[in-house]
Length: 267
Image (cartoon, rainbow, N blue to C red; front, side):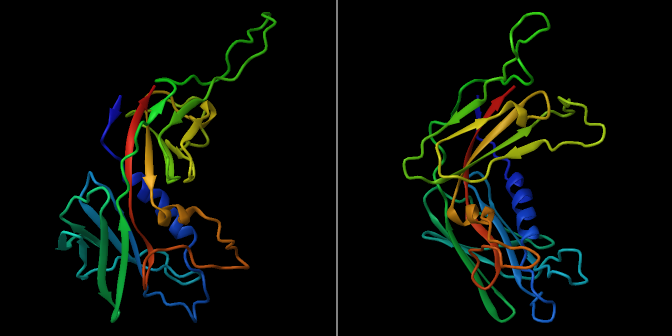
């Protein structure tokens, strides 16, 4: 069974971690902490929500990300122009539902400069299917005295159309209210979500060993733009070689990107 409900916060949590772990790490004396960091994922099922924060500078005394408030943000498309509504600290909402295939532009004035970005809304994934509706964890066969060696369960294979070699990413989440762990997790509580990195492919195998909980899972297939996929690239940054993370924001950091998705459910 498929659902059109899309769990966008999954993207926000993951990319928020990536942006934080790869923030521009430069000497405090030369770094500009007052740089706007933009985070927005435009999906055709939801109004546009834009999060603006200050850059967190490496080795500074600040440990909390501070929101940027009081901005006037405009969002435009070929047939629309709206001014965002301040939603909460650092969050701005554009009261429009983005449409597939259209280009959307964002712009605001900050520190006497113009911060802007542009993105398009990719098409919804087509022919998204799974090789089954359930997945078996653990080993099969090989009971003592049977003489048969144990075999590993068959992975769940996902397929979809990708004639133009677009970027796709699979996110799997346990949706039980009180999920039951497959293994003893007294010392470590495993994540309820796992995902692959964005790739230009039309198939993905879900290994049963990747599942940590029993019960129902939703498997979301995201159709992504390159600016999102680039956030996962290894830019060679280390404590000896500190680099600026990828971004499609002019005069800022972060990501303003269109996404689309479809969802399958497995047990």
